[in-house]
Length: 102
Image (cartoon, rainbow, N blue to C red; front, top):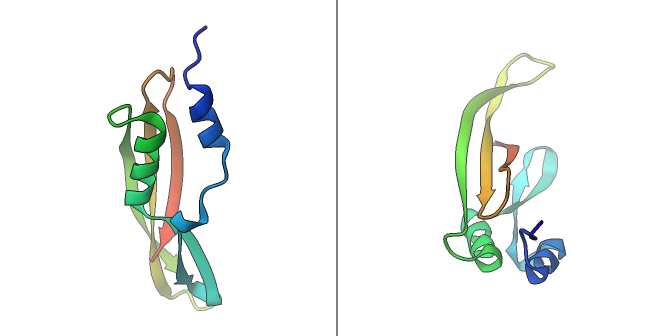
C-alpha cells in the first residue's frame, strides 16, 4: 500500500507546534486560554499538505447557554462545532468536536 504522507510531512506533523503560533486570551476564573488562530492553522496546513490538497467542512455548530450551578443564572454562552478535515490521499476524513466559551 502506498504511503499517504511523505516522510517530510510525517516529520512536520510529529513536531511540537511552534509557540509563535499559539495565542492567549483571558478566560473565566482567572485562567488563560491558548488557541491557534484560524489563519495560522490554514497557513500550516497549506505548508505541510500543499495548497489545494486539504479541506474542511463544518458538520454542525450549536450555541449552548452556560448556567451557574449555584444560582441557576445564565452566565455566558459557548459554541460547539463539529468539523470534518480531509487530506488528499487519505481514505477517511478526520472529524473533531471543539467548543469555545465566549
